[in-house]
Length: 170
Image (cartoon, rainbow, N blue to C red):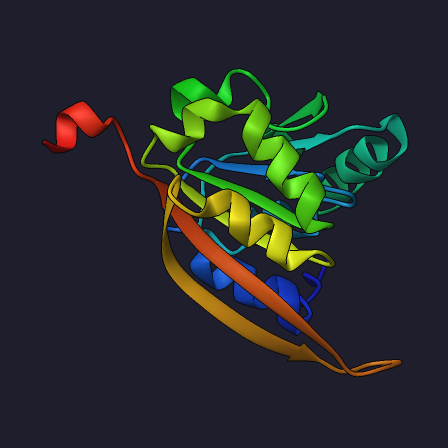
């Protein structure tokens, strides 16, 4: 079975995921991103989480269809699963409003002390997310991606890392 291709938005996000990282895809929807990264060998394992059972079932179906389900965990939760604090190498939070992303980050305060890469793609309210990140995260990159299709749309993708323990930095 031939692997699907990613659109420009997901392709840009995929390009930022560090090779070999354990990926947490928050709000996974159909799990296209983690399945693509697993099938292309960029990562070895992923956790797909979503707040609703329907999208999580769709994620599992995508993973099974492309032979990636044995390398994934599926978590029904609101935000970053708790076990991510122990092992996350990369957290992707994409395709939702900037205020929702900021809320997810606020509930996972440990990410501010972590060196895990956090890749965010707000659909709306980008300024709310940027205000939240200020002073908490070091921005590594900001990309503007244009997607065409039914209508032209621009997406902003932000990659950042928590600042770590201030005591360790001093």
